[in-house]
Image (cartoon, rainbow over the protein chains, first blue to last red):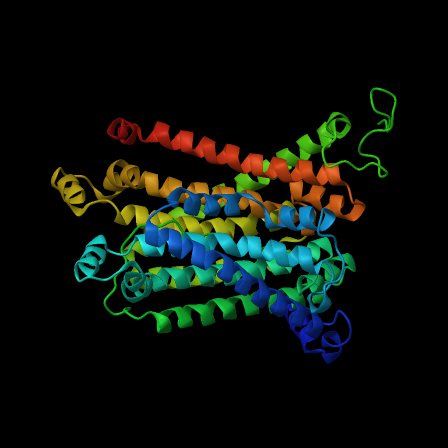
Length: 242
Length: 232
């Protein structure tokens, strides 16, 4: 426990938060990376997944995207992109290797968003869809008034998983000398400074848990039919940890 | 080791050439790739097996005690949310720079997946089946071993496959404490801008995941012959 106490006092030392490569700058980088990549991934993946789900096509794609995302290590993708075509140049406020990190984060945010949105759309009770069609709803109206509200909980689950996944991946960017809070951890290991390692790990872990908590509250609040619903399906837990 | 290729020219992995795909590299360094793959495999296997050994009693206990179940699901969600780099770092004060750090960290992640899947698997056993077994005089232990676990097996195996594949990917991050299997080659490849090594380690990592996934699928088919008979 002494190690944790030392880590906490390292965090409470204001000088560790200031300056270039201080905690504040790394935190800003990581938050910017997380928000930007999540927005990009959502804008790319959600329309496609919802459209495919509405049509009932491309189920194999939706499942395979998830399987591939699980098997390919985030670390390997970060390394391949930064040593390869995208390089490690600074990208404005996103820091060193900003572009390679952003692209990796977007890639790893896609699978949970696509799979959950697709499955959410497909799991809408077919009888409800039939009934809505029988009432004379056209495709667009059916999508907006019936399918989307009923699929919303799983769509939100996908976004929450993507958020946590992106935060974890952004932490790993430091292993390729990229931006973000992982740098505090890697610098601690490099300098044999265990207080810094533990301090950095505490910040990363606490924010991750806070994001998860915040997202699950948002998920529950935004569910339009949560009292009516009881999902009893058997589904494999999605991996997030990166 | 030679930096000259078989035909006498410089090997394609020397810094001035640095090809992504390089036969000379595979020939000269296959031993390094092999050792890293073996380390990767045993760290993954140890983590998943440890996770499974912990998950079974936890899941069985959680099934009995609803209050414990809520606690377990909450705690594992928190564990699962912690990024692997932070997880390994937080374990270092207890386990030091040893393979144990990586194995325990990864076992905690697989535990999360496996507890949920074991619970879901056991819940998928129909009540009528359970009642019939009870009527035949099965004790609860015998019912678990002979009826419930076999019927829950497909769901549990699905969880085991997910846990294994994601553990293979996450093992790479273990390079932060020096035990990342193929991740060590990725890390040293970044430092020295060694493209052939980076690509080879990445591809081997994905291959390892695919092979283990197919292997577990095979095990599942052997263990559940009735499912095969039904589908054919």
